[in-house]
Amino acid sequence: MLHATGTLLTIDVGEREARTTDIGDVLSSFVGGRGVATKLAHDRTPFDADPLGPENRLYFTTGPLQHSRMSFTGRMNATAISPLTDGIRSTNAGGFLSRNFAATGHAAVELVGESDELLAVHVTDDGVTFKEVPDLEGALVSETSEYVEEARGLGAEHLMTAGPAGENEVRYASIMTSDTRAFGRGGLGAVMGAKGVKCVSFDGDSEPDVEIPDVQTEVHRDAAQSDDPMKRQGTTGGTEFINDEFSLPTRYFSEQSFEDVADIGGDAVEEKKYKRGTCSQCAFGCKLPTRDDETGLETEGPEFETVMSFGSCAGVGDIVDVMKSNDLCDELGLDTISAGVTVSAYLASEDEFGNADLIHDLLPKIAHREGVGDLLAEGVERCHDELGVENWSSKGLEFAAHDGRAINGQGLSYATSNSGADHMYSEILSAEYSGELDPEGLDGKAEFLVRSENAAAFKDSGIVCAFSSDYATEERLAALFDADYDDLLAVGARVVELERHFNNRRGFDRSDDDLPYELPSFESALDDYYEARGWNDDGTVPESRISGGEGAVGAD
Image (cartoon, rainbow, N blue to C red; front, side):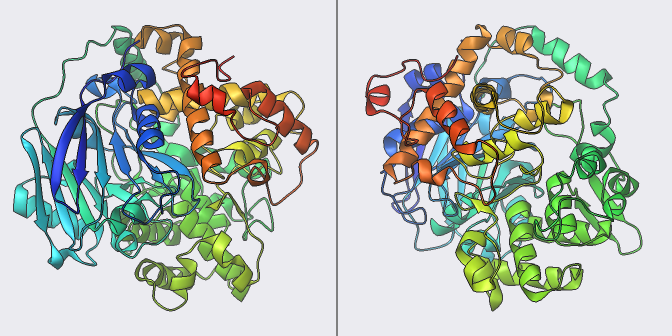
């Protein structure tokens, strides 16, 4: 099976030391990306590590397709224990970093320890250097990029950066790359900030020579020739459809459709789009550089989830206001979903839905933990009682859009996900929206969900963009990775199982697979899900399945 090649680079930021390790066996078993990072984290991070302590290890990984010239591969993965969910968390980001990372010759990098001084870490194929950067304390993401470009001649596409939110350990801080692309969900920017690392740069000329099957040309050609509406409107193109399906959270989940959706949806975003945007090597080009001529505001996005979190969920019906929220989050290093939902919880508590000026005032306060921002920086699960609102999170992660009360399989997915309320953890929502599955009810959906989670986990290991499904089909993925598709699903199943086992060892069980609303036959569906995976009925993984190596772990 095709897999990433290269070494593991361990960077101890406290001791200012670096060393390499051969991880060929891990690469061959887990392919790359999320799979490799999960295996390394499971085996090398103490189960009782404090997410914001020196024992937490922060992993960055690529997959074999980052050595290709194929569309949908301009992405890479980050993994650590999340300070928001307290469980293992993987998140990936697009942009232009992955090829620069691969050019260092490493398949994986782990940050360990913590530094007493704010650091910039520079990784090349010749080694690692550390530079104390006290002048960057509190610097915005773009200001950090400008500093590194002046000091080292490397642009933002070489960087991973913690904004002020990461430095101040906001529990949903992002790691930013290319200034506007985010390793967003779960607060890994806070992990980086807790280690005293402002930024890490990657540069080199030692990319391994990986032979990629010719089917990559077919995928790339079809992506280039497609007239998919995502090329014009990105993920916002489906906003009004989702609103019509009563699946668009509105005014902090008190409603499920938004009357001003046309003013923040795909057409509104497309009107502000002023040039084509893409990721490395991708001919699909679904990104959204936007500009408002009246105010001069320029940003990238907002994508659909940001339209939800700072638009409908906050009761804001002006796309320029949503664009400004998006831009502030990028500069401060905040996950737009968790930030928007948490701010919306505050708006609910103050009866201030629609107050965009208040939102824009709150975001810097959150990033710097000033005033009420210190409370909101903790996220909904930790602040909802004090605000006097419902807890719209699962496993501590704020809910994404695609409301599980309307598409019930997605609700089950939010509950079973090892990452919490993550809409990207499975692909079941697409089946429910398309009519392949009846959106109502959970009968027969557990086995579909298992396969869907496994498929998503494999793509995150490959690494292949989630929006590639019409182009990197099951047949083409099998050809790309030189394996039967069921073998790819088996890799994904091992990843999901290791995540679950790690979280079990941190105290997670069936009681954490929960939702703030009722679904029909939910407990029965959980039983079916655990049975399909071969897990215990309390939501834990039998130790024999881990100690026994790579056995059958729910791949069928």
